[in-house]
Figure 1 (cartoon, rainbow, N blue to C red):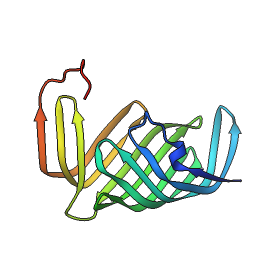
Figure 2: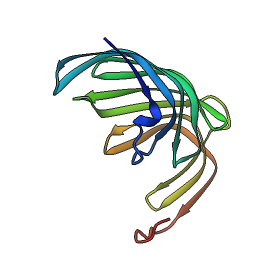
Figure 3: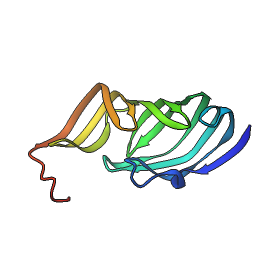
Length: 168
């Protein structure tokens, strides 16, 4: 096993919808198998992680988390994560194929009545409001699905045609 340490902000891509702005990942990783079909084994601690995303105006974090990696599955252990002034328990699974993400599933359970402030466009519908409850966000690198038992409140919805020729 090799010891690894990574600055999470250096690993983020600006084209990603979630960009880590702070945090360190430390741990041990062992890789077995061929280069085109590797299996991974290890444990990582995520310390002081913070992230920004355009649909969560208050940001995420800082938070600490543990990740256990076995074969092609990275399992994010349940952690309390601040979303602005709200807190949610977050856990998840990431399925790796050839060292890249094939599928992912993240579970969020809000812990208080405030909920998480969300600003997002879904096609021609713009949403700005708060959500609380339990949700699962999952998918592949090219598609995302959201499901769960979610209460949306203090929310504005704007519906209209999108003019794709102008930028916001």
